[in-house]
Image (cartoon, rainbow, N blue to C red; front, side):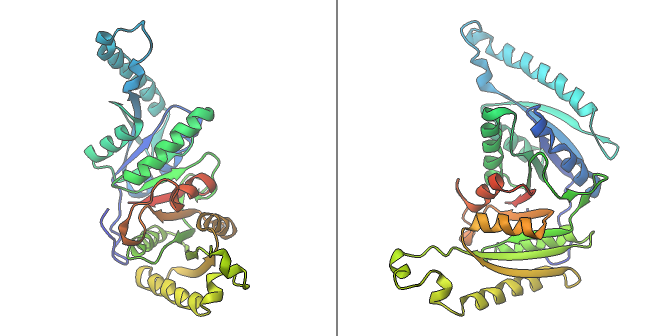
Length: 310
């Protein structure tokens, strides 16, 4: 995704991908895909993956029969997918069903997105049952780490983002940031999404206050105790980024918090009643977050929709 300039409205997705494993939890992503399709007059592709490891069905299926088995399985899945797509619509546009065979679900989703120039991927972060919760959640996290386009991650029963009529209604956005150059991309996306609505954007920076025990022995519990002016300097930087990247007519506020980043962001999003949290997979120096990063933990812990930018 190209970096957006203030107010230029550069991000207008024209092709949206929603994935499914046919569970009800995965289907929870459908309303979001349809709502964004309506908002941007975009097309929606509905994708299911046939994993090539399905050929390992036991000794009753010889290796020579594996291609025929996979083709037959793909045909069966496509039939079910067409029936599912027929029950859904995106503002008069039908979802276009696709089935692809891949060695892993992550590889299949990413390959499809790259080959078809997808602008937005919408995924549920849980599947059906304990194993599927682990599998589908892991797939969503891996896709967000490697996708070349934004990924919207949702859970069943999440709050915010859609109004009663199923339209996108982004009125309260939370943008956590690390104050790197990449933070501008997050804020410009917030500006873009806030434009059609009467929205409020809250930017926050969380300082991890974990300090060596030796400091605690002398009564120093926080980095702010070591540097009394740190909070003020950080607030000035956050406010400066807001003014540079978000239009003046959009109401904004900024906060500098301290503590565990994912917990503080989740707590703030709850108190702020956020419709959407916009996060990046990159940190200082454009380094991708690894497994266990703040964005991944937020995907697991929060009940708010998260838009993860590449």
